[in-house]
Amino acid sequence: MAVLLGEVLDALDARYDPGLAESWDAVGLVCGDRDEPVRRVLFAVDPTADVVDEVVETGADLLVTHHPLFLGAVHGVPADDPKGRLVHRLIRAGAALFVAHTNADRTAGHGVNDALAAVLGLEGTTPLEPAPGPPGTGLGRVGRLAAPLTLGQFAERAAAVLPVTAGGIRIAGDLGRKVRTVAVCGGSGGSLMDAAVAAGADVFLTSDLKHHPVSEWQQSVRVAVCDVAHFASEWPWLSVASDLLGRDMSGRIEVSVSRRRTDPWTAHVGQSERPAESAAG
Image (cartoon, rainbow, N blue to C red; front, side, top):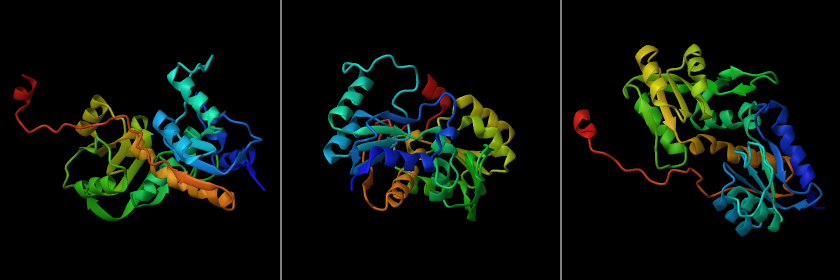
């Protein structure tokens, strides 16, 4: 018996409660018919043209992404608009699009932040910013490494377990300092910097940090920082979510993780060390 899209969506909502999403967020079904059959599901961080290419190439019936295709008000999806074109391509391919965003960030046990903490080897994790719901629900995670590492070793571990990106990993702090308590937040986690301090973190790993907050933080609390690509920080969730859905559907559908890297940065040019006044002048 075919699995209908509605049954798959119910399973996803049961794992990633849409009630946990921010009020401004746009989660759930973007396009698709709940009464259509689903045989293959593809998971990706971003609903980009490259990922839609993969949907078409693999014959996936459902694309599940972390980032929404639309966040603001939408009054039309013409095919000559970049996002509208993606909707048209998905519909022509008979594929639906579903989003689990901030609800997946806050989910306890198998959400974006738990997946990131797990690949980094953190134990005994708790939310940095708890939210109403089951124990463990909330944004970010803080936990401990099984054994202390230097900041440099921890950054090397992050580089080894996260996807390779053009920007790599930026570090603020003494590479030789010991770190044991680690705070993480998948995606843009700058708003949780103070929560990481309050949790006693030795290092905070997240994405999209800005110059001034990191500079001021280093001058005051001196908690080390690892800034990784936004895409890379959320990528570990894909295999967790796809495996769960496969089990929830009792193997009646095929699940896979996109092979496309959707980090928007495409290259990095290294610079030789020289005095700052020379570089600026």
